[in-house]
Image 1: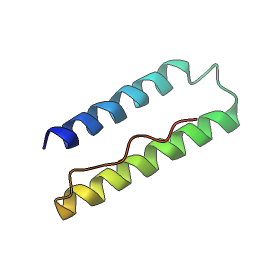
Image 2 (image 1 turned 90 degrees about the vertical axis):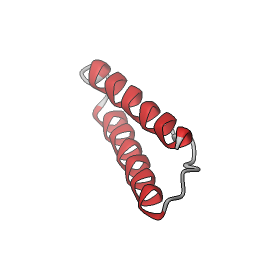
Image 3 (image 1 turned 90 degrees about the horizontal axis):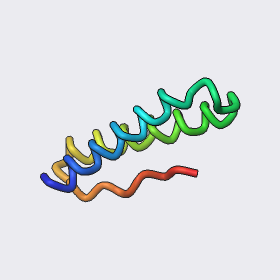
Image 4 (image 1 turned 60 degrees about the vertical axis):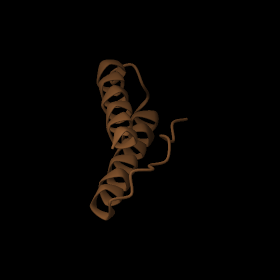
Length: 61
């Protein structure tokens, strides 16, 4: 469960960072970063439903 909590914290940190610099990023970069966060959170959610706590690291550019 520790891996799961760590991955949630990474997602939360990235979401907070994206929110802070949202206005400074070009729209394409905001969209790509937001999409990556959404994909990672959905992957983590699916793994949690299966009981698989070994989530991959975030895919940030």
